[in-house]
Amino acid sequence: MIKTIRKALMLLLCVSMLFAAAGCGASNVQTEDMLVSTGGKDIEKGYAADHVFSLNSNSNFSLNPSVATNHSNQLICSLVYENLVELDNNFEVVEGAGLITEWMCSEDGQTWTLTYDNTHVFHDGSPVRGNDLRMSLEYCINSDRYTGRFASVQGVSYTDNQLIVSLGIPNKQFIKLLNIPVVKVGTNGDKHPMGSGPYMYSEDGTELLAFNGYNGYENLPVDVIYLKEYFTAEDIIAAFEDSYVDVIVNDPSSYTNLGYASSNEIRAFPTTNMHYIAFNEESETCRYNNVRAALQYAFDREYLANEMLHGNGVASAVPMYPTAAAYPTALADSLSFNLDMCKTILQNFGLKDADDNGFFDAMSGAGDLTFTMILCSDSSAKAGMAQKFAADMRSIGITVKIYELSWDDYLKALEDGELEISDNRTVKYDMYYAEVKLRNDFDVTELLQVRNEDNERTNINYTRSRDTNYETYINSYLAAGDAGRATAYYAFCYYLSNNATIIPLGFEKQQLITHRGVIKGVNPNAGNPLFDFQNWEIDLT
Image 1 (cartoon, one colour):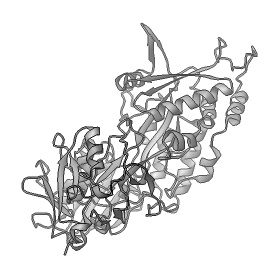
Image 2 (cartoon, one colour; image 1 turned 180 degrees about the vertical axis):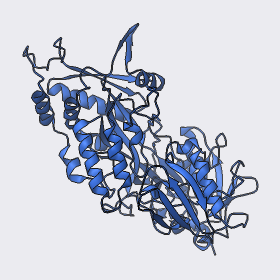
Image 3 (cartoon, one colour; image 1 turned 90 degrees about the horizontal axis):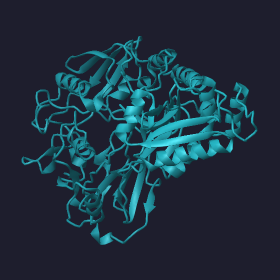
Image 4 (cartoon, helix red, strand yellow; image 1 turned 60 degrees about the horizontal axis):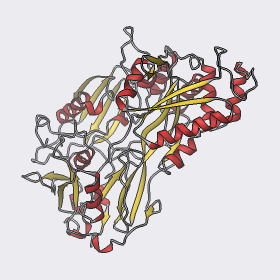
C-alpha cells in the first residue's frame, strides 16, 4: 500500500542558471542536520493549503525528457522516467539506484559493457529492453540538451540484458555521464513519451499517478501529484508561500534567483557549474604564461563562495568540485589568494614601476599596466567578484577596467577577440569572466581544445590558445583507471597552473527549499534533486 496522504509528494521549480557559452572524496551527502532556515511570516496553517501535493509545470515547453529545456518540466520528468544511473554529491555512481546494475570497462577504456535490470516495465506494462536503452542513449546523443556530452560515442549495441557502448576516445569514467532518462522506443516523438518511473501521466496530462508496476511502488509517498502552472517569478513565489506548490529548487547565483519570505528549510547541494577566468592569449600582456600564472593568486575565491554567492558556492583553484575523488587538495591550496605572491611573480617576470608612480608600467613602455576584463551583465555575483579583483589589483599597482556587456555583446566580443568601446574604436580584451556547466567527469576539453584548421569555433574556447598539450593531459586523465586517476589529474592541473589559460574560481551550489518541519529524508543532488524520492517522509497536515 502507498503511504497515506500525509506523505504528500513535493516537486519543484528549477530556475534557469548558468552562463554556459556553449553546463570518492569526503562525503558531501546532505543530512537533516545540514539545513539553513530563513525567517519570515508564520505559515504553519498554510502547509496544506489545498490538501494536495502539487508541482509547477510549463505547457509552453516540452515534457520530453530527452529534449526538455524548461527546468520545471525537467523535474516533472525525473518522476516519470528512470535514469540509466544516478550520482551522489561526490559525483560517483550510486550502486543499485538506476537501471544499470553492473558495469565493466575494457582495458583500453573504449568499450563499456553495461548490465541492466530487465525486471522493470514501462507504464503500459511492456518490459524495458536493451533496444529501449540503446535508443534512449541515441536520443540524448542527438539532443541539444546533452550537447557534447556523448561526442566520443561511436556505436551502441545491446543483448537481452546488456548495453554495449563503443567510444572513440578512452574514458574510464564514461559511466558517470549516463544519468540520462530512458523512454520506450518509438515514443520519443510523443508529447508524453512512455516512461518506467514511479509516476505516470493521467489521461488528460494534468496529474501524475503512482505507477503500481514500479519497483518500490509500496513506498511512494502519495498516490497523485497535481500539475499546476505558474509562469512569473511573483506567481511562483506566491504559490509556494501559500503552499499551492510544495517544493522549490532555486539557483541563488542566477539573475532569476527567487526570494522567499516564509519560514523555510534550505538544503544546498553541489553542482558542476564552474565560475572561471579565461585569457585572450592574443592580448599584449596576457599572451605571456608568467603573467597569467601570477594572476591565479589575485582572485579571492573564498570571497566569491561566501560573499558573492552568499555561502552557496565552494572555492576551487582547479576545475573539479572539491569533494570529487581525484581532487588535488595540496595543489589547489597552494594556489590560494595571495596578492604578495602575485606581485612577486610579476616583478620577477620583469614588470617595473620606472616612473615611481605606484603602478606597474605597461609592457609597451607607454603608460601604466592595465588589464581589460569583460563579463556578461546577468549576475551580480560575477560583477561583485570582478570589482573585488579590480580593487585588489589596484592595491598592488595594477589597473583593471571592467566592461559589463549584454549577452549578445558579450558573445560578439568573445568571438571577435576585441571589444568596441566607442564609435569605430575597438581594443583587445585581456580576460573574460565566464560560467560553464561541466560534465560529471570534469572533462574540460571544450574549454581548452585548440580550434580547427579553419579557425572555426568547435567548442567554447575563446582564448586563442594554440596549446595542444592540454588535450593530451585531459585524455590521459580520462583514460586512467581508479588507481592512476588522481595522479593523472594532478599532472593536468600542474600543467594548467603553470600556463593558466583559464583560472578556475569555484563552483555553485543550488538549493532545494521546503517549508519548515514538513519533509525528512531528502538527499538532493544536481542530476536529480528528487533522488530516492520513495524514502521521503512528508507531512502536510
